[in-house]
Amino acid sequence: MVRILLADDDPVDRAILTRWLERWGYQVTAASDGEEALAMLAADPSIRICVVDWVMPKIDGVEVCRHIRRQHQEPYVYTILLTGKTQKEDVVRGIEAGADDYIIKPCNPLELEVRLRAGRRVIDLQQDLILSREALRQKAMRDPLTGLLNRAALFEHLEKELTRAQRTGGSLCAVMIDVDFFKHINDEHGHLTGDSVLRDLAGRLESVLRTYDAVGRFGGEEFLMILANCDSAYGQAVAERLRGHLAAQRVRVDGRELAVTASFGVAATENRRHFDAETLIRAADAALYRAKAAGRDRVCVARSADWLAPPPSSRVAPHA
Image 1 (cartoon, one colour):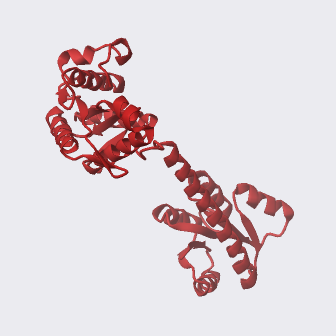
Image 2 (image 1 turned 30 degrees about the vertical axis):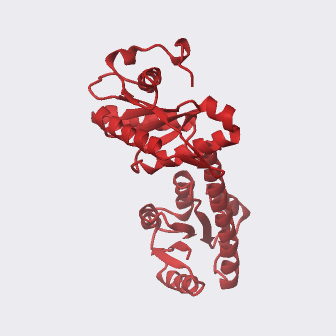
Image 3 (image 1 turned 90 degrees about the horizontal axis):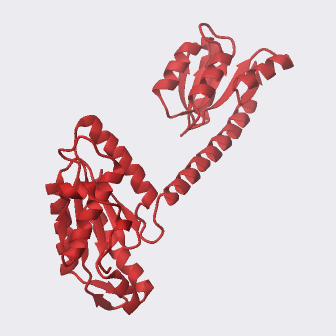
């Protein structure tokens, strides 16, 4: 049910209009002047249509329209201006102030009902546009293979969490994950099987997340988990639980069971006064590199030296 804000200083007109609107199935919030109307609009974001009289004490209808256009872009508030003014210049002034429609008083109920239907069509179209835009935004943030956050979205989330941690004095943890011998899986069983392995791992990673954590595909067979409000001990425990779970349960692909393991690198911002996203990820990646070099299927926590590690491209990586 659409909620309408009706603003009219004449109590008789206000009562008649309210009765019409409620008969047509609208929920009505009524105000006796422009100032009260703006206060009601600010207090109730569910209002989608405003029917506003032009001449009112304190703040007139034209100024109400201007305020609505300045303050309420999304969701759109459709505004109909009621007035006894009949000059073309007045109509232009009202529309330029932000009114979507203009009705000359005395108001005919059939005309008002039809114009409200037109307003609802505009509102519905704008809502569809908002939903479509949000769907596109979500799609742009997702890795198409696994459905997890992509690299860009991971960095955006990490920057927000780092800002929060620095503001509150908290800590967060980055866990880098790499599927062991993934190239061998692709070469031996085919890339479609490799894709299935990545999707399976993505589901397992999501299953251990708290609502405020995040996980995404960092690139290739690498994943990144961002664990908020925790230290390295918690991150290590989560990584070890995942590692053990993955090693103990084979991945089923097209009727076959594959033994798949992964290596984990953990880095946390605890006890560090200065840190940024790049440094944190580099430390987690250096810990991951040590886990791979030490035999894979293990968890390594970043040491002090890992925070000063060179970029991954400058190191000789162990075989995937």
